[in-house]
Image (tube, rainbow, N blue to C red; front, side, top):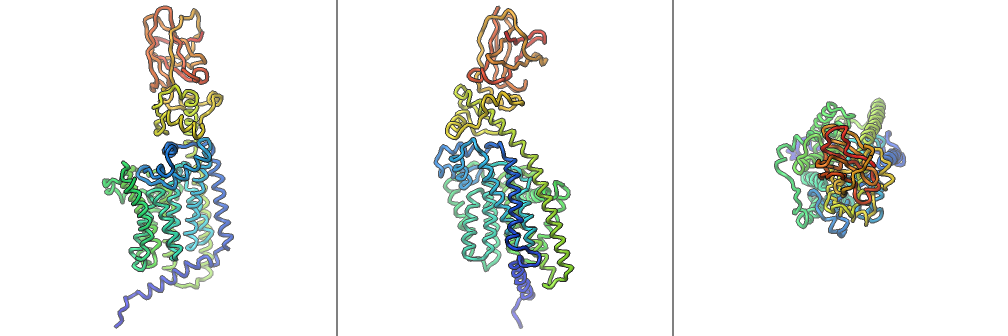
Length: 576
């Protein structure tokens, strides 16, 4: 009696046929030459770089980036080992530190170009992972869909996300190298995964996914050193620095782990379905069913699919534990999810196609149908690129406006920083890390990003609406008694409810009121935002001269709000 396992020889033969066809996929009649493969992808990459460079003009550091600016006072190594929201950002910080040293704060485009090049690298790796499975032309289109994945606008328009994209690119490279099954490939995979986990913690998801696949395939146990070395780097950092970070995983998020992953899949697919939520749900369901079929029917030959699908699920599981971010999913998480989902879909298609197509000699009609399908999918992919680019154009004004507001804030610090309270936060909404003293140091050592006076005076948007209220409140306002003018020209506008709005001219404005009365004064863009407030009391025959102290007094057209006015006829402000 034979000891062979029933069906083993059939499965083994199927596996050999799959590997052979995967290896020689680029030699099919549908494939182009290697030169043509590269041209298709790189033409699309150049188009993306042109579009992205156009969008990135005028950007400045935003939010978390100012942590990197503040850390620039420390040595590069010690600063690079500081935990940021529980992440180790060693390579991203070193890259940012070098760019700051070379270009300073005033030239932000080089930082954005690094982000763009990392995005192109991720697209190229998706293209390379797909090229041995499907048509090289379609692989190039698929890689460009990742580059133009506009739903992840945070990753593509915010230079701080060089860490996220660097980790994603390194992890995708690890997936590519580990499947080469060569000694050099294993060493390259280990290096790539080590870079991934030391760029952001999302690299741990890929390390776990690859490690799981090596455990499930017993013949690969001797290759477990690849993920172990990568985890060792992260573990050494965590023991020395990371465990002191206040940000840690919360087990309370485990209950919603599967729901979170499902929502992540739908949100990722929604962008691939041109923003239609119902179509996103349908696409996610189809891919889920196809995944189960591929794993069930081709288990022994689906190691790469296991790596991809396990990495994808662990990625969302880690986010649910670490962030508990409510739905909708933040766009920065969708980028890595989309790369894995697209590569996984290609792998599913490849496994099912060869599982259900037993004959290697296909009729000519099959070739025609396949060619037509590839052409249609390529057109769809280009349409997705156009849709993604449109989403980027819609998201770009947000970062542009924030940059303008920060240039106004920097200009105010340049003018009157020495008179301001040094502990005042520059902008609690967008620059919570930087006080006036921090900003003065940064502008002195790394260059000023502030508008000059002429530019600020020419802005159409009210200056007080651009600069945050706390910063305006840090500019001293002076008030002194003067003789009541015999005649004066009324200034300002009656707003009702005892409120008078006046634009302060150079030299200040004279505020008049009856003897014994009092007026409260505030500097603000809007009446409900008090950024500076004082009480003016009037004696017989006197008025008050109110002005901004320092350079702002002579240069900036700011606004005062005067409370306590009895009527529109009793103007408290005059020029005379």
